[in-house]
Length: 401
Image 1 (tube, rainbow, N blue to C red):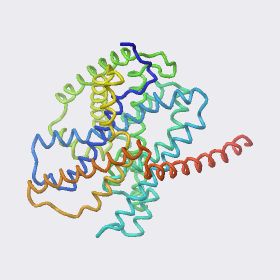
Image 2 (tube, one colour):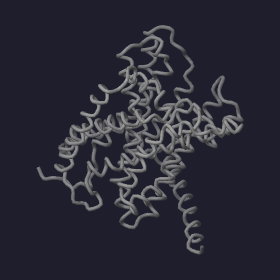
Image 3 (cartoon, helix red, strand yellow):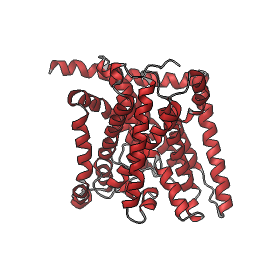
Image 4 (cartoon, rainbow, N blue to C red):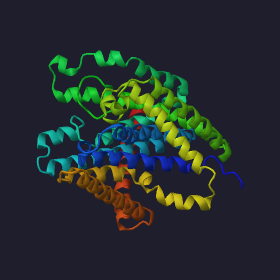
């Protein structure tokens, strides 16, 4: 079989993204159905740690896509188009975040109007959708990250990413806004941006998340080679995926052997994530690299005919923003509380099937360009036009200064 060029889409990454969003939604369903009350022990800890892998995987894959999709365009002189696309995506994330806050305001015993407005301004917190707030910020910062990547290369960025975790104890000991008698809103902002203070956010902070994005850029460079050169082949990608899988898979058991007792439970219950603990990012990075490398290795050799059935199954990855936003809105509106393990399991299956079904139908509608697709694409086009207008206004002012 003739090798395909490396600039073709790596379907294993799409598959991994679908698995990650599925794990994320499953972890939220677990919380809503109070499954912790009916299932505990090592098996539950392992499952929760596996589901918790969703967040670092998704963030790492964002960095990977910056490296293998957006960086080549950046180098080809399409900085304006890349910036407009990333910033418009940031605006979409923020708007969907605001919509989820509206749902929280409308449900019984939901948010007050004042807190809802503060949350839309990125000063509050939501049960499940704060990752949309995170992405709204990092997507806005992504063009700057790409510019730094182009100017300095990957090594300085990787050193900075590692340094963030080396200074973790000092960051946690720094005085926070609360120590200066400031409001809890200010505390949440400090926690959200830098991991400072005790804002009780789901995390990770923007600073720590950027380190994982840089790790994803390095992973993308390693697994796909220099995509900007358009010289990589399918077999080369498969060989590098094998090496990365072996290296990351070896690191996982070594880390498990050297880790403290109860680490698995801490990875699953979000305590390490909320603390921005380096162990969370080390475990998340190794797990995400293992999962992605395995998916790439399993799919990279498939022919176009073999990839077609798989492309239909990765709808979660294509509709990830819709799934995460509207899937969590369904969970916000779910009011029934199970009282037995059986009822909790039935509710979990039912809610999961509803979310999967909606995601599939949305993806199908978008692929077949139906009426809903026309509306969605029109809204996206308007957002992009607005962003381009703002960029056009900024560029002349920058040239005059």
